Image (cartoon, rainbow, N blue to C red; front, side):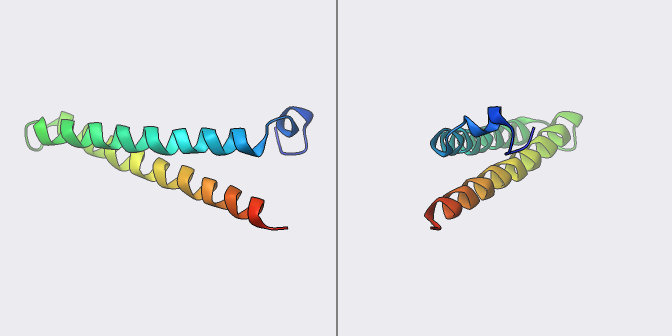
Length: 79
């Protein structure tokens, strides 16, 4: 589905902004949780490695959602 389809056109920018804000917050919380798991796991264990991987992925997803939010806000500010 792209921005030209009727279903996408019915979603307001405010709703998208709210969703992206919640996504950013959720990924930040997931990153923090995985960081704690990594710190509590035995060093070099599979648990520590998987938690580290998840932590970095959550950080990247947080950055992606935040960037999309900034781009949406910039477009809204452009006449």
